[in-house]
Image 1 (cartoon, rainbow, N blue to C red):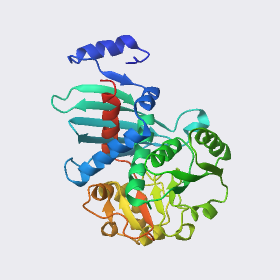
Image 2: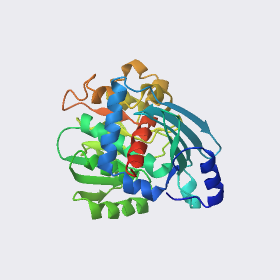
Image 3: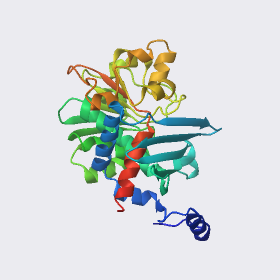
Length: 332
């Protein structure tokens, strides 16, 4: 357990809780050590299955927008635990030497309501978001070694690729970022830990047409991925649009694809689905399934090799519960 800078204040608060055990504090480095990609994918897959079977209540989200960013508050119950996570998402922060995402996650047990742990949420958010992409690839992508294009090589990027690699072998990986230095840095990191051919690209669409999986992971506020950029059978993991102002997928591509969402209630107001509905080319009823329905077997995933599938991933609090439980239990 790592104590914050003002140790005396925290210790007095911790003692005043009346709990028989201390609250576990987990920093960013410790989250990374405790939560491998494979373990996180497994945990997130399990909680999506429970959601699809109706075994857990739907998670909740509240978003409040500030001048330069936004605060997202997500909460969920699963497996005898409750999680509440507060993230500040400020896309301009790297220019002033601060991380884009900062926040904290609180883990409680539900039998007595006892607070068990406080965790730095940035690394956990990256890993559970990547894990959802891994689950989508497992159930929705073609069953073959992958050629993958990753658009956006920032904070989320490594977790996205590690999670895909946990469920499918990656033969070739194309990396694209508005900042070439960011892409180069990720390429060096991944080349040291993967057998895949890692290629930096500037002309995005020539390479998306060669890809089995395209992951869009940017803070873009205007759509850039179009139907003619993809080949038949491609899976698009649309990760970046986690608030109503972000958009990566052209609405017409959404309308012409088989759309699977993480949570329909959330995607109609936050995700790329939100923009397709606003453009009048889709309705909520056009969505093929939630990912939990596919994982649980209640709905089919891919039915033909030629299907183009878009997974609209806005990030749900049940992913946070699954990841936080894994982090917490690794200390026991």
